[in-house]
Length: 260
Ligand SMILES: NC(=O)c1ccc[n+]([C@@H]2O[C@H](COP(=O)([O-])OP(=O)(O)OC[C@H]3O[C@@H](n4cnc5c(N)ncnc54)[C@H](OP(=O)(O)O)[C@@H]3O)[C@@H](O)[C@H]2O)c1
Image (cartoon, rainbow, N blue to C red; front, side):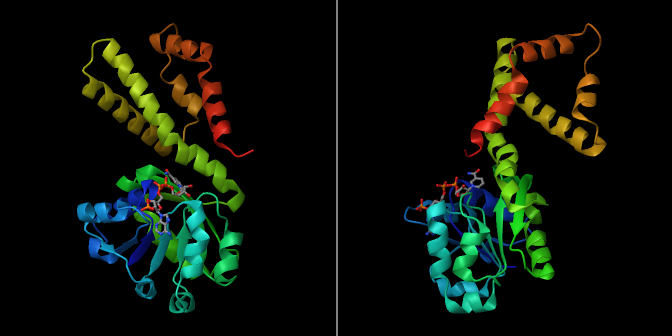
C-alpha cells in the first residue's frame, strides 16, 4: 500500500502520523508533497517518509490524500499527470471548502474521489472522519478507500451536505475539549493537585466516559443520572453548570463554527 499526501500542515501531518501509527504501513511507502515552506521537509526528518518531487510518481500510488488549504485543491487536481488520471488512483480530499462537484469538474465524473473531514486525533489512530463519495463510485473502490482510512480511527459515510456539521462536532471540538481539559485541570490545581496529575485524571476520565457511552449505548442523560446521587456533590456541580449555561455555551460554540 503506497499513499501520497499533498500538504503536511496541521491536518496533513496528523493524517501522515496516523497512517504510520500502527506500523502496518512502512514510512517509505508514504510520499509527501509539501507547499512553499519547509513544513514537509522538516516532518520528513522526523518521520522518515519520502518527499514527492515528481508528480509522475503518483501513478505508482494506491491512494492520494489532499490535505492542503482550499485554494490549492483544484490547481493540484489540474496538475495531475495524464497516467495518474488514466489509472484512476483514488483521491480523498480533506479540504473543508471544496466540494465533490468542483473536484469532479477537474478530474471527470468517472473519477473515484471522496471528500472527508477528519479530526486531529487521527494521529493516534483515534480519529473521527466523515466521508462522502462521488455518486457513481465503484463499490469496490469505495470499500478500498474506507478500508485504507481505518488506521486513522472511526470512519462514517455521510451525505456531503452533512460534512460541515460532522466537521464541527467532531473536527472543531478537539479544541473545545482541550480547553475543557485545561479548565478542569486548573480546578484540580486550585484544590491542591499537581498539574500533570490533574490533566491526566481528566484525560483518563474523558476516555473512560467516552468508552462507557460507546460500549453501553446508554443515553447521555442516563449516564449523567448514574453519577448524581440525591443531595450529592455531583448534582450540585450539574446545577452550577446549568446556572452558567454550559449546554447553551456548547451549542452556541458549534453554531458559531457553521457557515452562514
Ligand atoms: N486542522 C484541522 O483540524 C482540519 C480538520 C479537517 C479538515 N481540515 C482542512 O484541511 C485543510 C488544511 O488545514 P490545515 O489546518 O492542515 O492547514 P495548514 O496547517 O495551513 O496546512 C496546509 C498545508 O498545505 C500545504 N500546501 C498548500 N498548497 C500546497 C500544494 N499546492 N501542494 C502541497 N502542499 C500544499 C501548505 O504547505 P506550505 O506551508 O509548505 O506552503 C501547508 O503546510 C483545510 O482545507 C481545512 O479546512 C483541517
